[in-house]
Length: 114
Image (tube, rainbow, N blue to C red):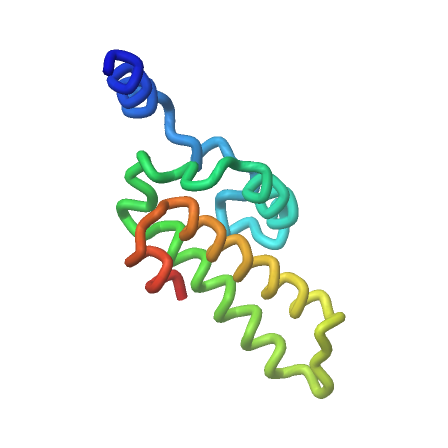
């Protein structure tokens, strides 16, 4: 019983994990996006479960802007390809957003991540 309380206390008082991730600011994407995805893959499941993730919707707003801008550039291309840099960045961004949503353990975060 005490070990479970100690574990909960440790998680409650620990610094937030999301703030420590490389590439956690979508305004700097695509710089840091690959490092973010690599780090997300190595985290234990539900790593952001105890965190008040993105209370002000800052990450969501910035990541959505990156996605919208990337899609707009892709639409302007005459022959868009999966191999284009914008397409790769879009896939990486969508992967990061979905992975972060799964790490929160919140069904509503997962459903509303896009």
